[in-house]
Length: 258
Image (cartoon, rainbow, N blue to C red; front, side):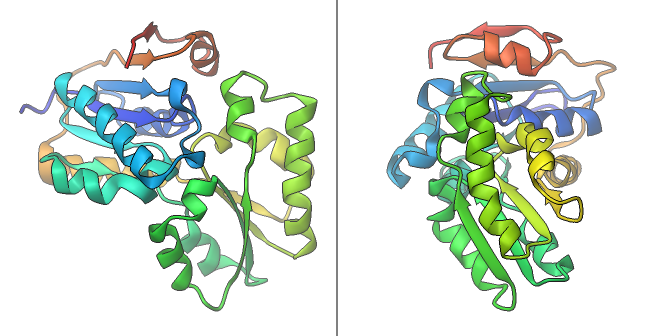
């Protein structure tokens, strides 16, 4: 393995591009390969065993493409499958978990909200994390329907606004001062969320933290690229238009049956 091999990133669709963008911004010389498993989105409604099987399928495809490190840019896949991935494959994995720690640590009202998929909120890893913050009231909300709307390109729709209003209003009434976005798709909803939340409520997602952790692990275990430029590659197993649109048509998106 050499330093210039690519970083692999996978998600249950286009949402993980929010993580990819943070990584690419911090590490622009790293070659990256992104897999959007939109055909199987959302992972959050699947069983743990299904999520593990899909995560292994994605991992094996990225290994075939020569990746030196894999970022699991999906909260549901991380919380349900990363332990199994690390046990089976001899390659560094970076996971993404809801950023409960900074929200709970800095909350003045000791009440925070988390918007996530059912798969993340039901996972053993998530519940172990929650147990560490007994003094903080954590209001959990499953984002039913949000991923499907994002995957179909309906981010700015009336239906999206209605769902977000329904999910966020009880959190506002409970006096949260932090909202944790527990799904890599959800950062694309921040403009709509800000219209609903009072301005004092801070929104936290995991992108920057994951990018820094990726940089640290590369330095410690694999090595940073010495390329002078990179050419990111994006694969999707459904219509490429939504992925192209979210990337603002700046990169080539290829169809691949996986």
